[in-house]
Length: 178
Image 1 (spheres, one colour):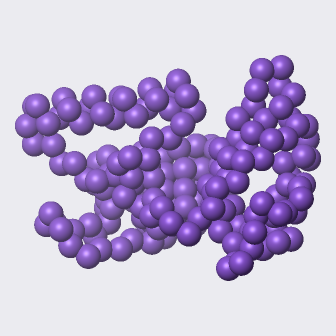
Image 2 (image 1 turned 120 degrees about the vertical axis):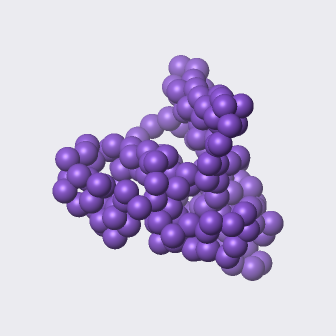
């Protein structure tokens, strides 16, 4: 059902949610569409070829895509389970609507937290190009940004960027002038 033709009719910044069956998606077409449309996202709790047992080694190219948010396949089979799953889905959606934050607690394909990451907190002006310059300086020191939260304060003059970064051994991020 969801193939190249179907996907071509969606908005480039669209979001496709699949809670039906994994096999309604043509994986290669979806991956091509995700790669070609950087603002397009896919959310699902079902994948092609997913295990039929509670635990199993399993991998999927779709599940590894950076713009695929996958959750555990719930498979609710009772009214109570369906109600609980519906309530949880609504909670996650409402959190995003109210805060703009994606609740990652139930995702299955998020990178594990790396204990070698370092935290940087950068205060900066809310002005075009300022944060880009910060990123340029970090890149020149071979510092890779793994996670980012940018908070804009009242009056839209100042911001704080909280970064989780990785860098080569021996890099002292406190000494870097941005």
